[in-house]
Image (cartoon, rainbow, N blue to C red; front, side, top):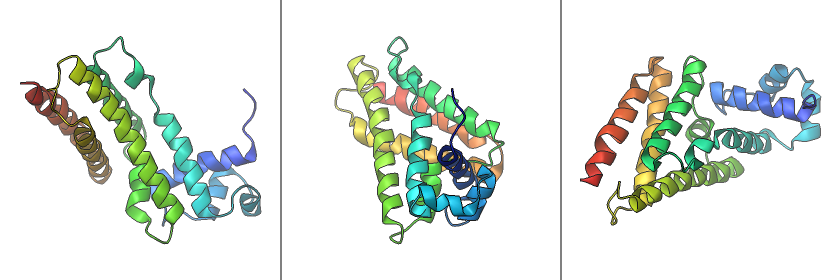
Length: 194
């Protein structure tokens, strides 16, 4: 693998800084400093901070694409649980300083950043669609009732996950992740199968 080019370094730095500090608290200077790049070089690669945030979100989301969700050798609900446990380990490894870039951008952008709003909305849709696909498989195996709306359930699960991420950042400990896994996978989903 070759050395990353300057644009890649800026994108990587943007993912890190935007995830840690949020959109409003992160300046172009913060990002270029973290990338070891001159500030002027930023505009050779990106039209604006908003355009950078959209590309950074795409890079972040690609990193969340997990073989865990696609591994059909593992039962669907167990696969989904492993996926969330893996994501909690990523956040725990950063000592809870970083959360979810999607949630962070959603919390801090408004109609003044329409490109970012659209990208976050699309990312949320992609995430819930992936969860819904696994839940659909669980319906097929009889682990969820046939009349269960997997789309609605996926939305609730993902939204609960985003809330858990916010809470672990505030508390600096994994308690909310443990509660999320326990309630969703030990109580809610098994309860629906009854």
